[in-house]
Length: 357
Ligand SMILES: [Zn+2]
Image (cartoon, rainbow, N blue to C red; front, side, top):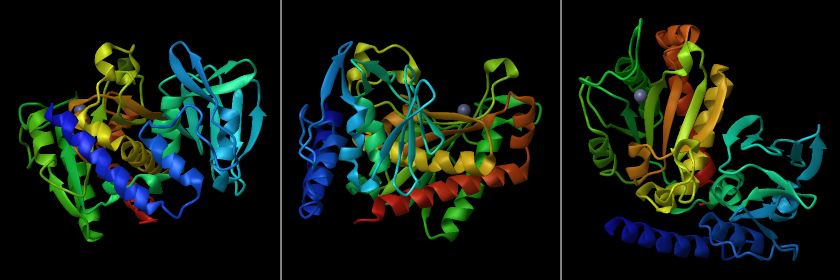
């Protein structure tokens, strides 16, 4: 009960602050703020006088993608069809390109892969995307400065995965707990140099429970949370980088089938918009800098990101079980590159979200 109460107050406070902030903004900006909280009415008026058209498909609300240009007018999007199944929106300045793949949950923003909660569909000649994907993914990325109160970043809580008697993944070069710890220290150094405060959820080779990590993180304010892990699996063949953010209410855990419990709002859902913006910034830098395989930004309800009150991500910096990537992760210079990417992503997020404050 308490959790629900807190996130509700949080929401009201934030609505109030941002409403003031947008008092002199054009109507479409005000509307997009309400969309962040899933409050978009089915026939919201856009600045052009057009309305978001909602279509129900398999009990889900969908919106017509053709309306994106009139809603995000500041981008000057032009729509085009690429091949048989790709719908592309290109901004006037060519710096933002969104690719929707019909029939797929994969969506690309400037080439960066995201996993939608529902596939893009074509119905009655219209390209439709689910409203939850518009509100919880597209909108916070296109307008990160709308995120509001949670966007102040003073402290970065670094959660080095595993520790103590829990080694995580093990390969011939070492243990996951050792690599996450090394990476955490490298990242701390860069952040401190830039004036950030840094907190760890564990000190050295120590076991801390997942709930314990959440408790430590939640002691801080004006913070973001970055959990560091390395992957394993895929019979040694899987490789690449993936970044997890908390599944919004109504979105399945880890892309599995939707269950009744998936409809519940969790502590971390108060930061849904900030979560995806942070993931985008970090994942984008990592893919660009490391030239690693892009496994995309994904949704899950891992304990640590479910419980934190800060914008948070769980970053999987590659597969220790892959012969090439496993060897790379064991290299100090590569860990340094990962740390640099995380650092740049954090700075980018801070800049983007604090821009219009
Ligand atoms: Zn792990």
